Length: 530
Image (cartoon, rainbow, N blue to C red; front, side, top):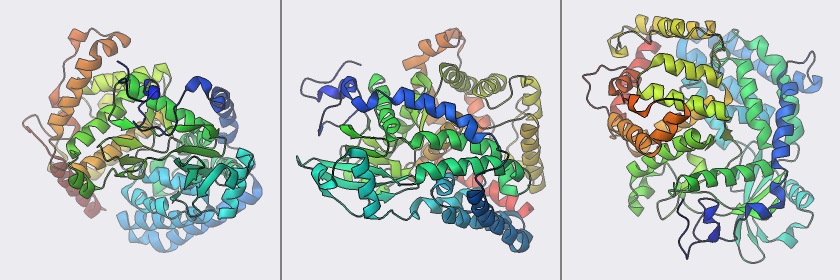
């Protein structure tokens, strides 16, 4: 990085923060930052005991969970199952969502993660659990006051000149309030729900005990692989329970963007002193939701540029530094008046080991060069396939080495049989979804949806070619050296990209609008088949 301009805030050397700072960030002077590595280590060591199925779970909580989930399954079995196909799955999803809302924060959080997993989970399940995002009751102001005062060691009035009683947003783990410090600085205050820590750990043990019994018993669970989902969920939610870790994530992601000179993104500054396990005070950034098309038009912001910057910025963080925001959705991205995008809520952050980061690099290169076996090797190294997997056999079983067959040329029966064959093959090889890969795919799904909203007529083939060319020019030599590859061997294969979309080499361009039409046709044929 070349460094900030002379009249820019001095802490821009540490991260992509705003140009109008309420305070300056100096990582070396942050007392709350010193314990974060210890906290992460302790959290990691605690996880095996939480996700190993216990002989007996916390009985009172297990009975409550079993009662609500059990009634949901029984009601579906008696009434919803007979509907068949998509209607049956939708009925089950609705009943599971209602049970999750009754069971409280942990299950609502699980539902919110599922709701961001379009392409990973059944569409009906994703659609239903999306309702969990906006239906979380707020804690009382008295409860919020107790948490803030207990963690900050002072009365609310002595810390804040103003503190809004009604939250800006209420989520499963915490809620966010607007406030003003005594020096007039506008801030937002994230406050953890009072009993969520204890409840989450009890629920994780219940989930670990219950999940093996769900395998293969209901359609939604068999697709989602409950034990693997619980493991990923435990890794994800455990770090969210300490806001010092979240504040450190903010600094790390901001630093990565600064190192990459990705100044399109802005991260709010955490307060130098007002950060504890359950309270996080941060800079207030104002803007509009990333998916608010009308505001883009009002301010003259280029939607194509916003999508492109989002794609490159997210992928660069993952591939070059192994760190990326792990929960992209419309509520976590705000566009500022100057066109830059503010990232919010860093509770879920992808953080890869060097070995997994290099596996992601190989996955990208394998995709750009249309080498399915190399891609499978990278998936294995990420933990998605067992170490002893016969990669050539998997490639053959999945038809990755065959000529591309356009799904639109297949009958409904053929589509269904092919889908079942691929799922059966993957399960037979012990495929699973490790945390980092799930977060990466989930973010790509969000960006996919952002293109649908902001740039439906964008030529996808041209855009992917642009991104691939950017990575080669900006990072090609470094990435090739890291994976032991001669840069001259790299050859971008556009036919491989077309194959990924299920079209032949004669297809010169495809807009997102056209892709959506293809997807809808395929979905309709599958629904009609069942």
